[in-house]
Length: 129
Image (tube, rainbow, N blue to C red; front, side, top):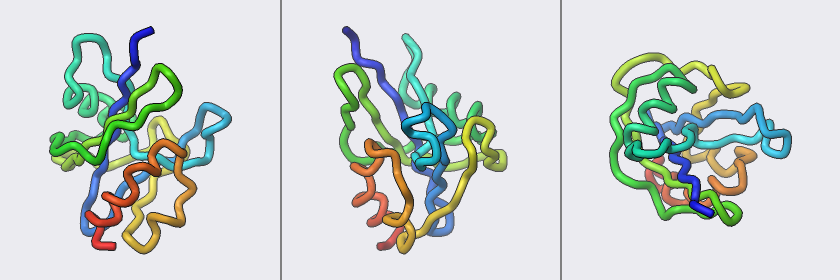
């Protein structure tokens, strides 16, 4: 079975990281994540991440460097994160319960979705923690 690739964006502004609270599925609802979504067939990682963040948050971004290593979830899903820079729009939770900005001092207090925890050490470093 082919692997489904999901991309996530780490938006850092003024020393804070934008995180999104999941609304679904039930086992992840209420937990926080880096926002993003599925890469469609024939779509680049960058194009998928730009599309997903526009749909989910209402922001335009430019996609930068990879963040950490790929994270495997189950047998068929691979998560990949990138640093992103906002170039337009104001973030709104169109597809999440809530959005929140966290700094280096709060990154470990967030109830993260398990898969995204793999990126926390690098994110903490980028936030100055």
